[in-house]
Length: 365
Ligand SMILES: *[C@@H]1O[C@H](CO)[C@@H](O)[C@H](O)[C@H]1NC(C)=O
Ligand SMILES: *[C@@H]1O[C@H](CO)[C@@H](O)[C@H](O)[C@H]1NC(C)=O
Image: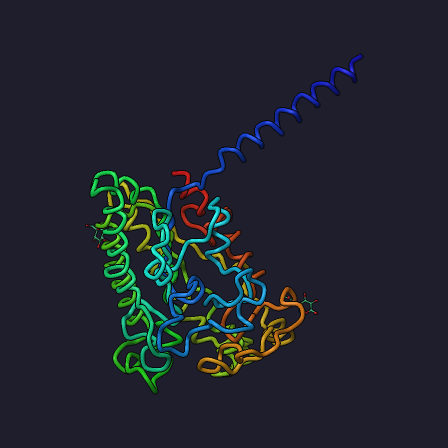
């Protein structure tokens, strides 16, 4: 009798749970109405395809594990932002700015402006890689075009457009190229002769701050700003610069990333304090530092030598199991590692990877 009662209680609870689940499926709506993406190749989903640049990947084996094949994503499958878009509950990926321009796709759920080799500084990537869309252009030019189109689409109802733009998440993942495709290539760029590493980083943070304020002035209120991963541990960095003192990675590059992150964190605090009704969070979801012995052992999944040497060779045959590799090419992670980063950004609970809150919390605020 007693155990029967327990059993029926349990059954009632599980029926309830199933119903609740069905309800949440039926109502499945993304956690935020829109998501705008700014950044570089970790986020780019095709914006470089029509540009004259070494940094484009609209050819196999890129996209080998992506349903649409090579789309300009710098990995074998979904990239960092694709996974985040899924976690936020969107049913479709966010279209690239170049695709939106050509097809007039729905822009009300957001646009991806990210561009491989782009940096915070306009010149980053220009002399050694080629055309790219720097962060400034992504924000003050391309995003403004989209805002105008959104407003037009809403019969020029400015308050309604503003209300929508207030609710979106604005993701900014940029800065690696200002070091690896600028400061640390003195052959092409004079920044290392003009600035100490610390002064150069101050310049980056100042410029980033200005650009973020432009977004704020254009009704952005929810910001996710990414710190830099250990850029000295990529196979490309190790082969270009070598390692010293028994260190497995290129220390000077990793040190630059650490300095950048140390200066970005207080900026995020200040912006949270200074900009009314705005919520900023700092994300650094690279996870535990990659064990470089593993990198060397496992190697890149594809054969590198494309692009400026760091990308996969066009039409080369990739490894048979990308899951066994951290790196897809000389710089970019495999899809599985991208997913690890996305999961961290979305749900990690330590201030090391999300400070003061993770993406899920940011969406719910
Ligand atoms: C925030 O406000 C303080 C005090 O006015 C100011 O010193 C600081 O530069 C501001 N920071 C930013 C990033 O706007
Ligand atoms: C590297 O390869 C080995 C052997 O295939 C595998 O066991 C290991 O998990 C791989 N490491 C990573 C980080 O993928």
